[in-house]
Length: 109
Length: 124
Image 1 (cartoon, rainbow over the protein chains, first blue to last red):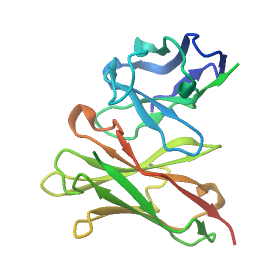
Image 2: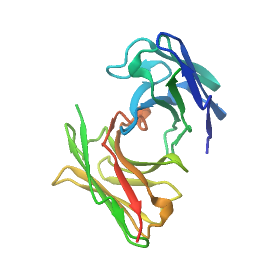
Image 3: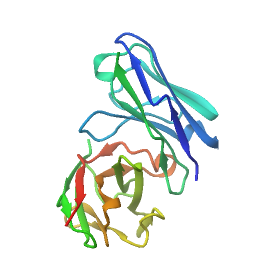
Image 4: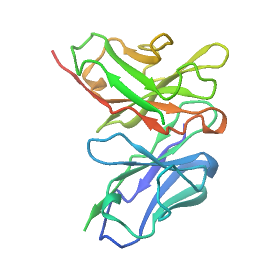
């Protein structure tokens, strides 16, 4: 089973700043099967990015994803107030089980 | 737009059965291009995929090893819903439980729609 490790645990930034979140896999995986979710307090996770660099419906273009092999990142180019949340990466293959990282909290500095 | 609405008790006694239902609107539980999943979230385990049901000419199920012996995920085509039953619960099963829609093929585990979550407490 692939283990995903996200860093940092918490990212303290100001609105307008750039956020770069890391997700490291315990073995090489395809970026096509790396997904990112956003979760706000009291809400279910929301799909943000999938398929290496595709944004989900309604996700603004300040969100982007990149990476290959074992190292992946989610970048928010200019933080808006609504972007402060916890972000999870997820890897999947064609058969389960499917695993999630432990999350990175992006908080207002 | 798919919407998932969960229902079920939030309090379960130890050793009893947890049962949660997920009503689907905007899609069909019998869709050949979707899968219907249960995922839970707790401070100790984080986000944990539990299992899924899906229809591809017949019904299939998959379960996480951690719950395989205790979990049953069932579709109900007459009500367009699916459910999770987890037997013999312990305090370790306390979590927020989510239903979520996945796809098929290369989108099989891209969860693009989620229920609102059910907070389950395990207590006498």
